[in-house]
Each structure stands twice: as C-alpha cells, then as structure tokens.
Amino acid sequence: MMRTEKLYYADSHLAEFRAKVLRCEALKDGRYVVVLDQTAFFPEGGGQAADTGTIGGAKVLDGKEKNGEILHFLSSPLEQNAVVDCRLDWEKRIRRMQNHSGEHVLSGLVHGTYGYDNVGFHMGEECMTIDFSGELTWEQMLELEKRANETVRANIPVRTYFPSAEELAVLDYRSKLELTEDVRIVEIEGIDRGACCAPHVSETGEIGIIKVLSCERHRGGTRVEVVCGMDALDNFNARQQSVTEISNLLSAKRGEVSRAVEHLLAERDELKYTLTAAERMITRLLADTVHETEGNLLFINYSAIALKAAAASFAADVTDHQEIMKNDVAQRELVNLLVPKCNGMAAVFAGDDASGYRYIIGSRTCDLRTKAREISTALSGRGGGKPEMIMGSCSAKADRIREFFSSSN
Image 1: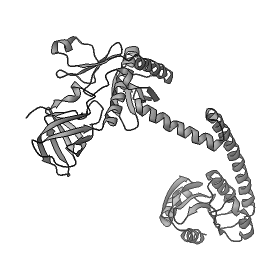
Image 2 (image 1 turned 60 degrees about the vertical axis):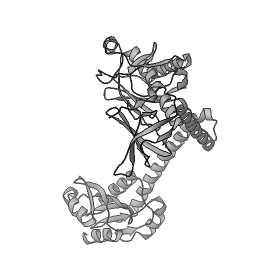
Image 3 (image 1 turned 180 degrees about the vertical axis):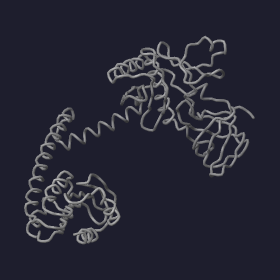
Image 4 (image 1 turned 90 degrees about the horizontal axis):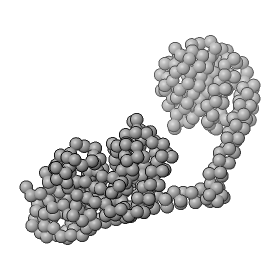
C-alpha cells in the first residue's frame, strides 16, 4: 500500500494539480473510491470537513484518510493509471482555512490569558463552535475578540511544521490528544502553538475579521460561536438585511430599531392587559346569562365575539358557537363561574373537530379526579387534575362531546 503524498501540507493554497489514479473501486452506495499518488484534497480532521471539487471531471463528494492513503469518494469512476486534472472548490477551502486559523488565534489567546483549553471544536455551515474548559463572560470574550483582530491586523506568519521526536518532547503546545508521532504543529508566534492536521492560511491577515457571535456556559466551561473572513462578511450582511427589513416595518431608523421594538412590546403588553380585562368582564357577563341547573353545563367554542349570540340563545345547557376561545385564563374563569350554577359538571371546550379540543371541567358535587378516566375514555383524550377541577385535551367530535355531557345529566 502506497502512502498518498499530501500536497496540502506543502502548499495549502494549491487549488489545481495533476495526479495519477492508483486505484478506483465501486462502492455499494453508488459512489466510487479513488486513490491518487498525490492530492491537495484535505480528507477531514481536526474539526474540519473534507474538501470537495473535481478529479478528472468527476465530482469529489467526500474524503477520508486510512493507513496513510487519502480516499476520495467520487460520483463516477476513473480509469486506473490515468493522469487526471484535479480542482478544489477553492472558495469553500479558503473559507474553512480562514475560520480554522481564526479559531487557533482565539484559542491561543484564551489559553495564554486564562489558561483554559479548547476541549471541543466543530466547523459548521453557518459558524464554528468552540468549547473552552473554563467560564468566560461576554465582556471577556469581546476583549479577546478585539485582541484577535489586532492579531489579524499584525499579519503574523502562520508556520506549520513536523518537529522531530526530540523536539516534540520539549515543545510546549496545545493538543486535545496525546500525540507521539507525525505531529504537525501550527504556530502563530506570540499567540498560539498547537497540534493540527488541517490546512491553514499563510499569514493572519488572510483570516479577515474574527467575530464572536455568542458566548454561553456549557458543561462547566464556555461555548462560543465564531465566524471569520468571508463567512463573517456574509453573516454581517444577513444581519444587516434583517435590521433593514425590521426598520422599514417599524418606520424607524436602523440605529433606533431596538427602541422602536421596545415601544412596540410595551404597546403589546398594554393591549394584552386590556384584552385580558375585557375577556374577564365578558366572561362574567356571559356567566350571568346562565341559569342554574341540576345537570351539567357545557360550552363549546365560545369567545367574546360570540357573546351576543350566546346571551340570546342560551336556553339549553349545551350551546355551540363558531368562535374559539384562545385564552386559558378566561376559559378557567368561566368554569369557576359556572360551577356554582350546576349540580353536575361545568365544562368549557375550545378547539375544532379537525384538530381536537382542549378542555377545563369543574364540579362541586363529584370527584373529577376519579371521573377523569371515564371522560378520557369516552372522549378519546387525556387529562387530570384535582378533585374539583381537571383539564386536558381530546380528539372527540363536538357531537360526541354534547352526547356525553347530555347523557351524564
């Protein structure tokens, strides 16, 4: 078995090359695995995904390393011993290099300032997540972010090398694993020195901006979300577009969006308070129209809009209106007001036949907690609560609900 020459170690900026096909095998999933004598396609590792692109016109779907060979997973086969043109998806590669090198800058600063280790790293499609072994505040992360971008501005060389066993034994470097051979070091002088197998930029200036998006506690440490370079630009543009759309909707300047939203939320809270007060008043008025009965009282789908119809038509114990009551507080309050007016059960159901109903049932004469199973069985639902009140949901149709409470009178 011949080891593949890893061109991405010699030149991380190599985007096109030619190589000889040493082996091509068909896989059961319809893909083909190809081994070349040399490759610039990074297979995956260190939290970074495999490169994509084309080899001999075939799409590179994935890559892995096994026993020193780089396995390229392709969409179509290649002829053995053929010399083929190979092209990386360079935009994807350079963005990953920007992010990964940016992670090294930030992790090196965290380690050098607070002594915390990078214990978890994942490069996703939208951002990177980095887990540190100690807790960091948002203010601390903002200061580290500033220093990270100063490092970018300084355009410090990013050096990669394989130290000898003797050099490695006395070298101080970051690593998540205990490594003993073929250890590749990525060093940014004065900032970071860590073990890493992935391609990196040549100077920190290539990284572009390093932007911390979030910072939160995670398993006794800190998890941060970060974007770098062109991904950071895309992230900024998306957020800027969102702010512009919100400012247009609120008729507010972009710099005043937060105050406009605060004003809108205050208005919403006032309206919610007013609506709740009105619903409670209407609920009390509705309950006043109900006559006392020895049996049950049932309301299905009532609301403030249906009050007039309810007051005019409430001659029987079972009524039906098309509007749906959406406020659980008002629903509970109506039950509380109806309970003293009946010697059976006072029930309020809200919903529809298609999606089902949620209910609250109260009584002063029967133990509803023991009756809950009977109700659930009869109405194809589930619920529970206290002896004097239960609540739940059911899938029974309105006619079945009426039938049950009528027969229980």
